[in-house]
Amino acid sequence: MPQPSQDPVKRVRHFRQILVWPLQLAPLPAESPLRTHWSALRSNPELHAWREVADEFDVDPAQFQERHYSEFVTFLPYVRRFLYGEGKPTPAGDSEAGSVDALADESPIRVFRRADVAQVRVRFDATTTRTFDIAHIDLYFFFDCDVVIPVIEIYADDLTLQEAEDTMYRFGRAFPNFWDREGRGGHCVERAEWLAADGSVMAASDYEQREKYLAHVCVHRSPRFASHWEFLLRPLVPEHSDDPGPVRYQQVEYARMPLLAYLAMEDARTLTRADFVRLGLVTAPGGSADLPYSERHVRDFEEKYCYDQFWHDQRAEHPGTRLMNCGHAFVMVGDAGDPYFVDRDAGLLGQFRHQYFLLFLIPHFHKATLLMMSDRMSDALNRLDVSDIETVKRFKIVIRGLLETFLRFTHRYWFHEVSDQPQARDLYRMTATFLANDASYVEVRESIEHMSAYLDSDSLRRQANTVVRLTVVTIFGLIGTVATGFLGMNTFALAELPALDRVGIFFAVLIPTALLTFYSIRKAKRLSDFLEALSDEHVPARAVLRSAREVWARRRAAAADSRQLPD
Image 1: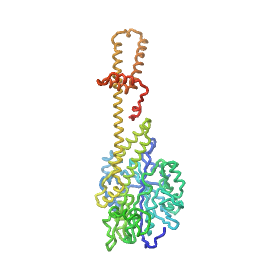
Image 2 (image 1 turned 180 degrees about the horizontal axis):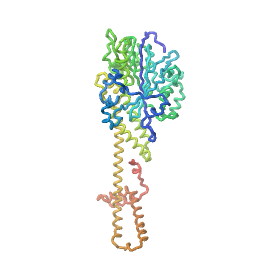
Image 3 (image 1 turned 120 degrees about the horizontal axis):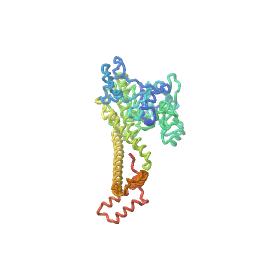
Image 4 (image 1 turned 90 degrees about the vertical axis):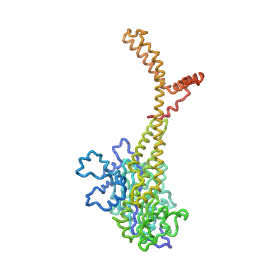
C-alpha cells in the first residue's frame, strides 16, 4: 500500500470501526425443542464461547454510570422499552406484579458476547500488516424476528489515514466479489486472522480459494462466507453448510458489512475534500488531491452526506466534529487534541460507541427484517403449486404467519422517530432515508395485504361453491324425498313384513339414495349451470337441453374447481 509521494502522511491517533452485519435466520422447525434462536446458545454453553450479556441496568444503583443515563435519555419512551425493557417492580410491589408476564418487562433484544478473540491481524498487502484490538464481538437477537446482527468493534492507535481508509473499505467483506490476476479476492484484505489473548491464530480468512467460492455458488445458488467469519459465528452455521447446527443463517444484504468509523486525527484540518469523500462514502484509498468519483457525482456531497452542525473548519482552535452518513456507513471525524472528542465516558467517543451505534443499528435492523419478510414471501410463491394441495396449505400457513409477524413488527419495532434531541433525530432520519426503509415498509405491507386478501377472497369463493353444491343436492334430494314419501302413506304394508325384510328394504333405499347424493355433489357445478339455464325465461329450450347434456359430458374438465385453494 504505497504512500503517494506528493501527499504528507496524515496520522489517525485513534481509530475505531464497528461492523454491523445483518443476517437472516432460518425458521426453527416445528418439531424443534427450541422456542427461540438464542436458546441454542443458552443450552450447552460448554460447546461454544458465547455468553449472554447481563442487562447494564440490572446493577446496584450505586454502580449505575452516567454514560448509561446519557444513553437512556437520548431516546423516546417507546424506543426505551424496545432497547431496555420496562423497569423492575420494587420489592413492595412484587406480590402485586406477580401475575404479570415477565416478558412484558424485558427488552425484546438478547445480546450474546464472546471474549476469547482478543485481536485481529489484517494484512493489506505484502508490505503492510496491522493488528487491531477487539473491544467486543456480540450477537444481537430480536424477539419474534428471524434476524441476527453480529457486531464487531475493533480499534487501534497511530495509523496512517490510508491504513484507516483501507480498513474501512476492505475489512468488512463477507466474501470476495471477484479475483485479480494474482488470485487475491477483490476489495478484500489479503488475509485476516483472529488471535487469542496469547497471540495464537484461532482462524484465518480464505478469500484466495477461488474454486471453493465458485463451486459453492454453482451447487447452492448462494454465496459462500469466508472461513474466518464462519468461525466467528459458530455454533451458528450458514444455510447450506454441511456442518450440523441448530441455527442457520443466510445473507440478507450486500456482502459489504455496514459500519461505523471514528477517526481522531492528529490535525483534522489537513483533510481535503477528497479525503472526506473517501471517508464518508467508504471508497478505496487514494491521493488527497484526487476525488474517487467525478466532480459532478459528488458536487452535493456536503449537503447530502455531511452533518456539519458542529464542524468549524475556519475556527482557530479545534475545528469540532464532522459527522458523515451515507446509510451504509456512519463516520465521525475530529481532532485527537480535543478533550471532548476523545472522552470515553461523557465525550463523543463514548457517544459514538453507544448512542450513535444504536441510532445506526435500529434502521439496519428495520431494513434486515423487511428484507427477510420479502424473501419469505418470494420463497413461498416459488414453492406454490396450485395443483398440489400440500404446497397450497403450506403457502397459506406461511403467508398468515408473515402477516402475524408483520403486525408484531409494526407495533413493537417500527419507529419513525427515536429521539427528540435534534442531532440524534436528524442522524436517524438520514440513515433510514438512505436505506429507503419507509418505501420498503410500504411495499412489504402492501404485498402481505394483497396475499392475505387473496386468501380471504378464495375462502369466500370456496364457501360460495359449497353453498351452491348444498343447494343443488337439496333441490334434487327434494325430488327423491317426494317420490319416496309414499313409503310413509301405508301404500305398502311394509310394517307387516318380518324384521329381516324391513332391514333389507331399508338398505335397498339407503344405498341408492347415498350414491345419488354423492353423484349430485360430484356434478353440483354442472347441475347448478343447468338449473340456472332452466330458471332463465330468456334461455331457449335448445340451450337448456344442451346444458342438461353437458352435465354428463366427459370432455368438460373441472379445472377451475381443482385450482381452488383449500381452507
